[in-house]
Amino acid sequence: MKQALPPMLIAHLPSGYILSSYLIERVRTLPVSAVWVIAAGMLGAVAPDFDMLYFLFVDHGQTHHHRYMTHWPSLWLGLIALSLGWRSLARGSAAAWLLLVFSLGGMLHVLLDTLAGDIWWFAPLVDQRYALVKVTARYQPWWLNFIMHWVFLVELAICAWALWRFRRRAVWYRQLG
Image 1 (cartoon, rainbow, N blue to C red):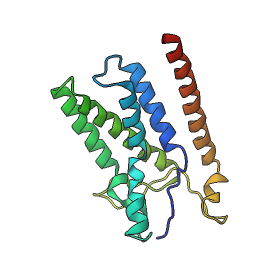
Image 2: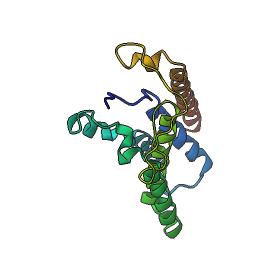
Image 3: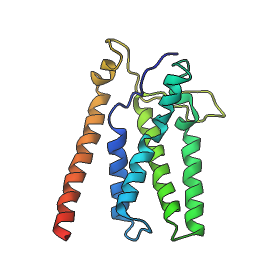
């Protein structure tokens, strides 16, 4: 099975920003700087796609990259549970908070990929893929199929939302300082 890149093309990094910026607003006392929380959320939101290095250079596109462990919801749910347990044992642990935000970003990535990309939600126990929408191959190169599909509007909306939040927060920070 040949697939060059993930179906969510541009919205993972902005989605990580949105997630972490809302967490900062909701949790008033964090044991770590807001910059680190934003970085952890954004890194987590793109982390599942680090498997693209293996996909391209080792596997040579033979296996759908969403079948790799980095795209298993069980991995991200396990990391979320681990970080919550760690956080409850060590309330002031910055590392526990950063792992939690990173893991939430990874889980958000998998949720977003479920929109138009196959995700094996019950892997490794069940070999069944799930996607909410099927993007049919009509255009060359392959990525035009995603850009010309309505799901790309969802990505653009996420990017616009992240930009709006960033600009709003920048104004807010300037007013504080």
